[in-house]
Amino acid sequence: MFAKKRLWAVMLVVLMLMVTVAGCTGTNQETPKENTGQQPQEPAVKEVILATTTSTTDSGLLDVLKPEFEKKTGYDLTIVSVGSGAAIAMGEKGEADALLVHSPKDEQRIEDAQVAVNRQLVMHNDFIVVGPADDPAGIKGKTVEEAFKAIAEKKALFVSRGDESGTHKKELAIWESAKIAPAGEWYQESGTGMGNTLNIAAEKKGYTLTDRATYLALRENLGLEILVEGDQVLLNIYHVMQVNPEKFDKVNAEGGQAFVQFMVSDETQEIIKTFGTDKFGQPLFFPDAGKE
Image 1 (cartoon, rainbow, N blue to C red):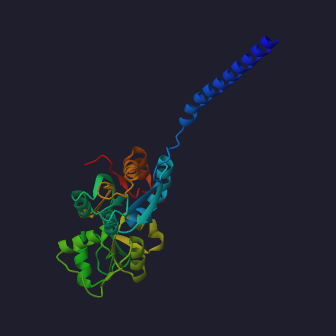
Image 2 (cartoon, rainbow, N blue to C red; image 1 turned 90 degrees about the vertical axis):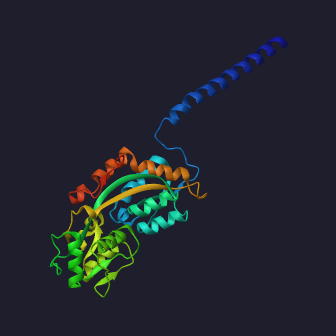
Image 3 (cartoon, rainbow, N blue to C red; image 1 turned 180 degrees about the horizontal axis):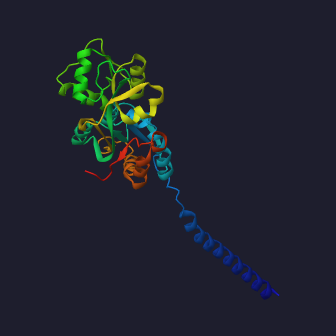
C-alpha cells in the first residue's frame, strides 16, 4: 500500500514538472512574437529639447514632424521656437539637445568650436521681399539690392525682425552689400519672430524680408504681396545638428542623435518634399539630405 502511494506521489510530481516546463517553453515561444512589432524601445531619457527657428513652426512643418518623431522613436520632443540666433545661443549654453536652424555662418562657428556635432543638411527654401500691393517704393521686379536701395531712398517703411535670427542676419547682409546703414523712422525693428513681423508689416503697410514658407502659411490674412524673389542671394538653407554631449554633460546624447537621424531619413525627407503642396499648390521646403 505504501509503495502504491509513493508511486502516485512520484507520478504527480513528474506531471507537475511537465506542466511547468511546458508553461515555460510556451512563454519563451511567445516572447519573440511580442517583440516583433514596430513599437520603439523605451528611451532612458525621454525628453529631447529642440531649439529651432520660428519658420519651422510658423509654417506648420514641425506640427507634422513632431508626432512622427515621437511615434518612431519613443522620445518626447519639446520644441523651443525662437530665431536661429537665440536657438544657437541655447546650444552654446547646453540648454538644448538638437538644433534646427538656418544661419550658416553661425552654424559653422559653433561647429568649429565643437559646441555642435553631427551637422547635417536638411532642406532649403528661399527668402522673399513682401510689401503692400501699391508698392510705394517701386521695388517689384528689381534685384534685392536694388529693392533695398529704393526703399531707403524713398524712406518707405521697412520692418526688420531685429532679433539676431537667420532672417535678420540675411537682411543685414543685404543692406551691407547695398552699402546702406538703415536708420530712421522708416526702419523699424519688431524684435520678434517672423509671423509677428509679417503681421506688423501688414498692419503698417510696410516691407519686410521673410522666408517663403512662413509667408505662404500666413498669406491669407496679410494683404502683402511678393515683390522681389529669385535672387541667388535669397537662398535659405537649413541644417540639423546635435549639441555636443562631450561639452555638456546634461545633454541627451542619444535623443539628439535620434532627432538628427530622423530629419535626414528617407521617410522624413519625403514628408518635407510634399509639405504644403495640398494647401498652397507648392511645397514650402525642398529636401536636401545627403547633398553637398
